[in-house]
Image (tube, rainbow, N blue to C red):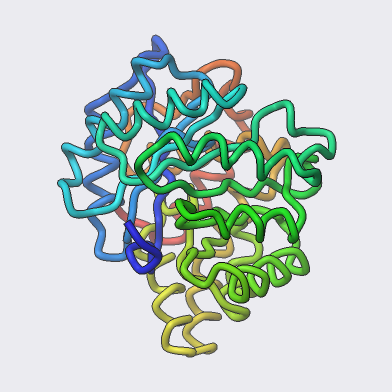
Length: 308
């Protein structure tokens, strides 16, 4: 897997559950058919935040990867989240992902690197220890800087320069940090894909430069995000603005309400509204969105004209 394989939109898939909390595989198959096979989608990312991976068992995470691989075929790149506590846990998750059919694993920062530790020498030592023991390429999951888990530009550049790093899922959530990180990667790791993932900044980030997009929103609007990406590649600002205008009402309804942690549950509400999934409930520790937010999401989807 290489940088050019990610040129386009990578969908971070949500994971539907039924009323009992079990994975609804029939709804998941419809979801992959809807978004995963869209011409706009360059790659699939499973077992991330959108897929509620922290609520899944080891066996469920493996089954998500295996089923997704079977649904999308062998040619479309498949990325899988690794949400570890330490080095051994990360290596075990990454090796399991490889065995299950993933082409790349996306490394979330471990809890021990919170509270500012992500700005120390620890991340480089950690990534070196993990990537040296796993065969397939890795991607760095860059968190929001405000969370305390985001890496500084200098640290991110060091991570990107490691031999097996193929991409950065860029979620710093500020344009200043994004542009600084992009320039650092262009200078020090030009073969690593920069994949912005904060929707509020997509128009600006694409204007500055990107190698693709990665978003849970692509579970809901794969073709519309594809239009935004394609317009950016044509350097067509008018078309970029038009694509952004079409997306904006849904985006603000999904991402604008508090708490932000419910964003993927709101995407599920929208997917249920258009008939892709049967049930919008998340799995604990997340809870269903409030009734007024549910209504606002459904109203926005209907007004947008989005269809399955």
